[in-house]
Each structure stands twice: as C-alpha cells, then as structure tokens.
Length: 157
Image (cartoon, rainbow, N blue to C red; front, side):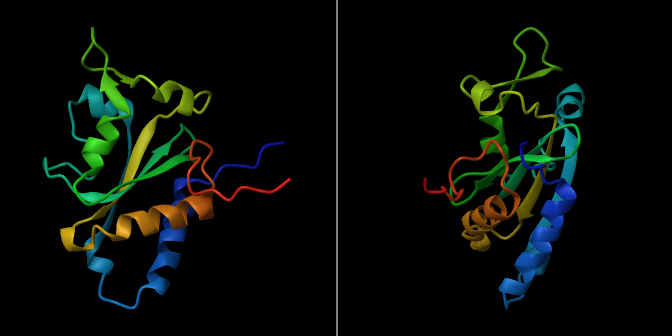
C-alpha cells in the first residue's frame, strides 16, 4: 500500500520548522501564496501565484492534487523565477486559451497524479534567492512528493 501523501497544510507546518534553523531576520522575506487552481488561473487569465503583479520572484513552488496533497516540490532561484519555472510545466490549450494542459514531457512525471493547483513560497528579496534550493531539498525530504525523484533518499537493496 502506498504511503499517504502530505497535504499543503503539512508543507506549511514544515516551513515553520525551517524558521528554527535560521537565526536571522529572514521571516519578512518569505511569503506563502495559494493554493490557486490551474483552471481558475487560465479561465481568469491570471498570473501564477507569486507573480500576481507581473514580477518574477525566486522561491519554492508546490504542485497539488484536488485533495491539496503535495505531488511535487520545485524551486526557482538565481536567474530563474517561479512563473518561468511553472510556465515550463503548464501551457494554454492551443484551441482554447482559457484551458491548460501539461507541457510535453511532463505528462509522464505527473502520470496518475492529476495536478490541479499551485501554491508558492515567495522569496521577496532577491539577495536571499540562494535559500530556495535548501528549502526545496528540506521539503522534498520532509514531504516525499511522488513526482519528485531528485533529492529523495535511495534505499539500498
């Protein structure tokens, strides 16, 4: 029987644990946004969470299923942005720009996982973009999302 998935509430609790690891005034720089459904993003022609004002921020993003279970954790840091990373996974349907589809190649990654929404942890101050990879790795180990392969412990046999 597969291990139950962790919810976005579990992810937020894990993020609270991260605060105890950092002994600096960082907390105002971290902003949690979402979750927001992919259908509403496209139907309303909105930006992805973390990019609402059109800005491009570093951070960590969560791809969730309909039960708000975390199925994938990713990062955007350095010269990348949350919106650009998410735009690599999800595209508008060619014949109906109010609908979305998985980008080519990502259908296999999310096979049977049914992504429905996005949430993000935005790092508002670019000087702290270097935190995104560390936070992503921490969350992958803590939440064990099924679509993540990098960053998971491999059990020996």
